[in-house]
Image (cartoon, rainbow over all chains, first blue to last red; front, side, top):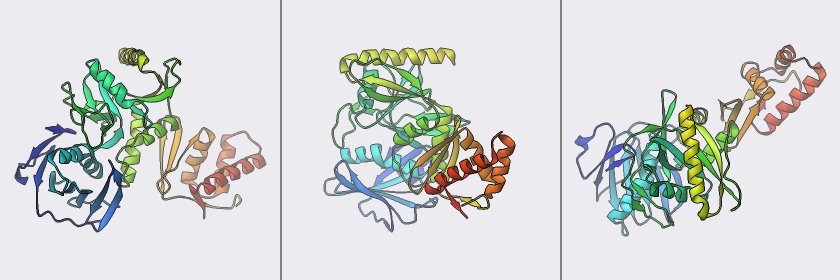
Length: 289
Length: 90
């Protein structure tokens, strides 16, 4: 399985490690050092915590990073080691380990390792160009992403988009080929066959803005602090690590990617109209670029 | 606070330009602010000059404004930044 541009190897030895590979292995006698706690809160109705043997203020190579999911699993890795061990707890199943690894722990680990900045966004391709959808909670990201998938567009990510900068360009990383167009706890969703296979430069981001069911679909470019606000709000895995790097990457995204507010009439019968507006707008921008 | 005051920019502040604005993020409170036009000019000068009289002198060279009016406007602007804890009077 390829996840976030990393090949996941399950139950193989550490020696298989290579660039862009992550090895996962069960260790029934796993022991962790939780001297430092970065975050402790509820997620999916479970208590979860990120802990380490060293301070999070200055992340070091080979620092232990642990992710504890109440009653389900404890993951443990060392920064930049590409090797993850886990220990199941009383309610742990392989499905739940998969969910917490794909959906939460890998994004946490890659954030701490400073590999990617995660945006809470849906992402698909239009004419092979990655398009991201960001929004407030219940703002229509999943519904719109689902609509594009059903229309045959290549899928990039359901709700966490890993982003990085290279040569003044901002790239996004396909997450994993599952999409959840409904609300259900600890569930990755349905398999999507048409899944993007490579990292690509982000073409643009649409910030979905709810509007009256009978209003027009309007698309307008935003700039300056409005862009920053939209991206800051859309930040996923918002951890207090690598603060300056993360701020610089966020401002780089703002400076290098066009962001548009799109008003979404709150009426499912008009989704086709929203879809057509986005496609036509993107195609026009591609032709002009 | 007056033109003889010196200021210090908060070490908790990250600053970056986005399009034609400057965005300031206070990493302690996670609050963010933006500056545009004259605010950007003043911030650029503040990055080099810590004494407000020198900031005032540079602005006088840049803008055709009354010196007393400029002093009032500058001190008001600095007071806003101080109240937001983005800068401190040294």
